[in-house]
Image (tube, rainbow, N blue to C red):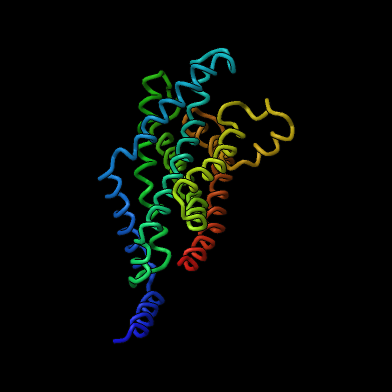
Length: 270
């Protein structure tokens, strides 16, 4: 059988891949990423230590100056830091994908009769481990420092699930960045440049109404702010319906915009 025939055969197989097979292939490739993490657990150090550092620094260094009461400020800032840490954890998706592209493993994926989007979904799916570790570490440190949740267990779990889902949806932007740059260090640096303004120009650390007018406009449209409002409401009590709805709309927008662009960029990658 000639190389041309093999290539045509693989293309035909990819064209006939159904939804069930896409889910199976994506799950298998997600498991591959999880196995990689389990073999290199030191790579989780940032999502374990980071939450403790941010919670202590912002809770005790700035809490007194911002609110005058570090205990009250910890209650306010904790949901915000939870949303921020899930956001920062998404950079691992871009860096891992960029490393795989450099190592040539995606050349092997292209030769397999699998859906083109499965390796990209797999890269995002495996990141759920980093997200779960980050949330577990943050909640554990928060409880040790005196954070107390004011809602029930199911509301707290819903807040964590929403934060993870938001992070996985925004990960498509990091996937596109990795496919466009293909340099792990550059992906990490540019990813931070994009994420930091979203994190700090929001209601994570201070109420939006304390900002200048032009900054309030940006913060009120910031998708991270809607996520934090939703998490605060689910964990500490307060409005839930509107911020959750807005967060879900932003999540859908990230997937609808960045997933097709990522697939186009992947198909053009050589």
